[in-house]
Image 1: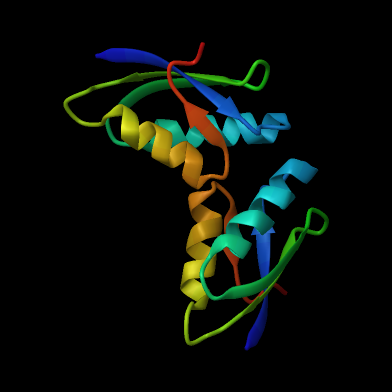
Image 2: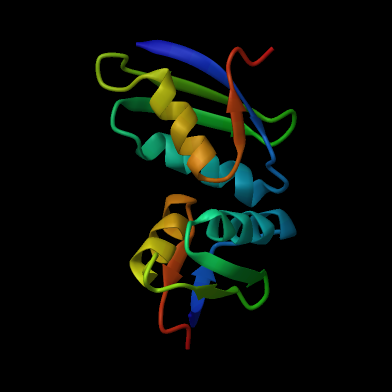
Length: 72
Length: 72
C-alpha cells in the first residue's frame, strides 16, 4: 500500500473537493482518499499493484483541475 | 450544427459551472458551450459530424456530475 499527496489546484467550493475525493475513491485500487479544499491537497492511499500515480493524476485532470506531485 | 440542452446536476458553485463549460468547449467539434449553475443547464452547440451527444454527456459525467437529456 502506498500513500501519496497530490496538489490539486482549481477547487473553489466544498462540492469541488468532495467530488474529487469521490472520483479518486471510485478508482479500482484506491483504498482511501481525502481531499482538503484549503490548501488544495488530496491524500490518497492505494494498492500500487492495481493503480498508479498517473491514473490518479489523470482522473483529477479529466475533472477539470490541475494536479501535480510532489505536492510541495 | 446542432444545439442541445443538457441537465447537469451536482454543480454547487460558479467554479463548477465554469469548469463544465470549459471541458465541453475543449471537446473537438463543440463550437459553443454555456452553462448556468442555476437551474443546472448546459447549452451546447456542436458539429454533429465531429462529436455526438454521448461524448458530451461522458465528459460531464467523468467530471463527477450527473448529466441527462432531454433537460426537461
